[in-house]
Length: 389
Image (cartoon, rainbow, N blue to C red; front, side, top):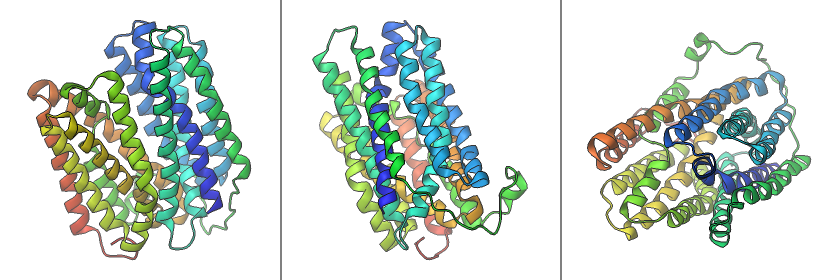
């Protein structure tokens, strides 16, 4: 479990530094460089799409060369390089370059890191391992958001607040890289090696349960749009910009506190049961956002949203790791992230179009129904194997 703790600390410090600046990048673009909302959306779309597409390749490279630690380190190093580019960016194009570099690293490091976590898990405790890692990851995110909240309050009106924040975010990124010194990579003998990137034929021959779950992830994510929309809903109910940052903190803190016990629970009752419950909780969350009209309701829904994230974020990775072919574990973990990331783009477009045409109720009800459908399919068609139900 020591390896999992240090991998978690890598994510803790890296996400602390990343979340210190992620919420303010759109503000930086619009207030300093005069970027339009459309340009902000384009920059974020390019960056996030790149990360999604690269995750499966990051997994493939880790399977092929068996250098998971080195590949993950390279991916996390870009999080540090990203901050330096932001500090010296003189236009929106520089910010675009910074975001592309950051998301490139995110795409490369995710799968090999997850393989390291799965290989470091004790027997029968895969859920606990991924739950602990996710708990530390989200704890870093929550602290980064909270730090930014207090810094912005203390430096209100100071034009140098962005540069100060970018410089300060370098420190946790360096600490995260230092944690790699304590991580040990397990060298395993594999009966089958990966010589080329798997073709569609190779994917078609995968375990039917894995293909079914990837379809469920796709269906669920099509109703799970960008978090920007739930923040917009909060503003529509009456929260100001500063309070919205606090809501985001509440969500991350709740998910962090519950991720580890949720992972342990999945080891006891099975991944399938917890994932089904998690999808139904998400459905309740989106129904809540659809009809919420009071600020007190929004607080409660953000807490419930954190509960949902704790129930599925680490558990689904443990699930994929367990049912993937051993020699393609990194590729399949990467493919899982890629499917979710690619689906998030049309999901956000659909949500935006429905919001513009019908108001905020319809897109959230749409997302709630897709999540409920994903839960029902998982419940009825996923077979009853060990650790899955």
